[in-house]
Length: 327
Image 1 (cartoon, helix red, strand yellow):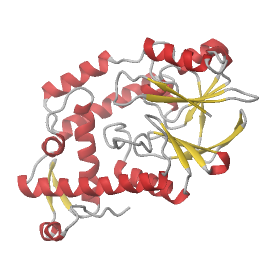
Image 2 (tube, rainbow, N blue to C red; image 1 turned 30 degrees about the vertical axis):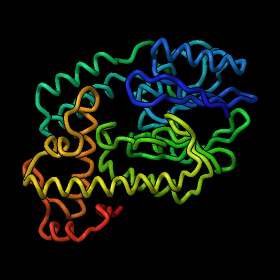
Image 3 (tube, helix red, strand yellow; image 1 turned 180 degrees about the horizontal axis):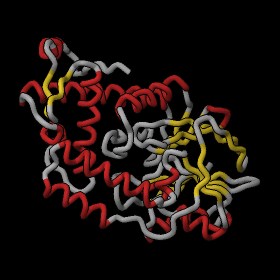
Image 4 (cartoon, helix red, strand yellow; image 1 turned 180 degrees about the vertical axis):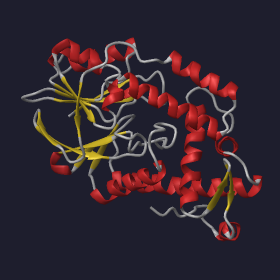
C-alpha cells in the first residue's frame, strides 16, 4: 500500500490517499477538490504508473469533503466504482434531500447551543467559501462487516461512528493493519459533535469505536491525516484519556460559571472561534454535555447545564484532572 500525502485547504494537517495496486487498482480517499490537491494526487499516482482513468475502485472512509472531493472526477475518468457506508452515501453522491436535512440539523443545533447570529453568519460564509465543486459520484453503499477482494488485498469494513455517522475503518493484511480515516489521528483528536451533527450520542459512539480499536490490537493504522500510527491501541487509549480530561474541564467550567449554555462552555474550553471551528467547538462541548447528562453528572434545563448534586465534591476528589466516562 502506498500513501500519497495531499494538501488540505479546509482542515489542519495534510490529508492522505492510499493506493493499493494489483489485479485491480484501488484508491482509499481522494483528498479535497482543490487544484493543488488534484495535481498532487495525479503526481502521486503517476509515480506508481497510475492515472485517474486506471482506478477501478474508490473506497471512502466517510463523507467529509476533504476525503471525497475528487471521487466524482476519478469515476468520470475511467468508470471507477465508488464505495461508501450506507449512512454517508447520500451526502457523497450530492443528494439534495440529504444535504437539506444536514443543513436543517446545523441550524437547529446552532440555535439550541446559543451560537450568536454573527458567528452563525461567519460559519455560513466559511461553508460557502469551501463549497464542494466538480462532479459528484454514483455511490455503491457498503455495510459493517462487508469484505472486498480488491487489488492484492482483502479489505474488511469496520463501522467506526462518532466523528461521522458512516465513518469506517478498512482492515487488511489479515486484520493486522487498517486504514483509519478520521477515527484515529496521530497528532490531534477527531472532532465529535460538530463534525457530523447527524450522529446521536456522538461521544458514546466514538468512545465505543476507540475501545473497539484498542481491543483489536492492530499493528499499524494508516490515518486520514499525517503519519502512520505504529501503536493504534496506545493512541486509542490516549484519546480516551483526552476525553476524560475534557469532561473534567467541562464539569469544572459549569461549577465555576453556574448554569450556562453550550456556547459559554465552548468559550471556556476553546476561547474565541472562527471559520469551521464555530461549529466544531460547541459541537464538541455539546457531545460532552450530552454524555454527562445521560450519565447523571449534569442536569440540563431549557438549554442551560449545571452539575448534578454531589458532583462538585467528586470533582474536588479527582487528583488526575480526569472524569471517568462510562460507555
